[in-house]
Image (cartoon, rainbow over the protein chains, first blue to last red):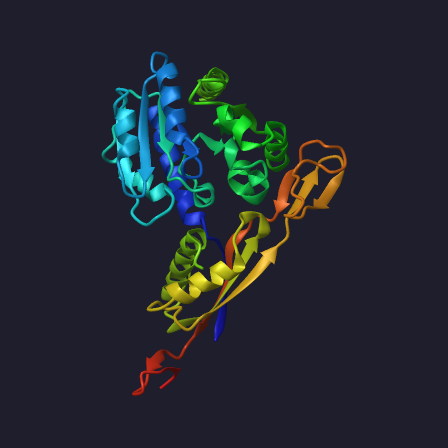
Length: 221
Length: 132
């Protein structure tokens, strides 16, 4: 028997590829958002609401991650925005290699903003950097105020947390204050945006925040 | 049950171990030692179960998996270091309420590997045994 000390980060190979993607995005001048959530929290709805408010302001492209279907990509295409579908099969998250392969067939020229909608999953996507500028999480408020404590990693990784379906709060018996406190406990720096994609409430504040964040990033380049 | 999360991690662990084993031309992998920070939300039982399933047919087929859990600790510039439990998870400074950074608990690494010289063979009864 002999022992070899490796101290190899399990995510090192992915992170290296993510850095490579990031360089590519920088070169093309594209701001990249990694949009994550559990299934059914409303990522695609948030994206639709965001696109209709941003498409006059900047040129948007979308990469959709999904296990099997193209429903989401179809919804985005219907808004006149180029959407590329990655079907991951049995893989429950996107990783940097999948994005890298996709970039071979997805033209970034002329885009200002690329949103990568991750596979619906509250756990795994948080582990995998894609080379994004910004991680955004959508959480469905009706799932319960305690979830940030139960699944802290994604809440912690996200720079902005959108608390969606606020229109359902009166029926769900969930305290928005308690939920916000729990998000802050695991991510004191997070931008927190209570929104309802159904009524449009709160979406403006989120979109303005995103625009500011994109402008900051553009100036820093 | 095998969490998808843990399965994804175990696949990468085995790939790292096999690559290292290839580098030193080892016959097989005897032990894989992981360091896993508790903030990663990785369930040890799920990790071990996934390893048991996924190691078959790889150079780690007869390997043991050892998992060290690293506690979550945060540091505040003014107040120093604190241990934070996952049961009472608050990542701002417990002293002053100001910002704190995570200094441990996010680890996810293969710390070391042990390689064996004797190959694993299958005897006439179909049992896997070590050596010839």
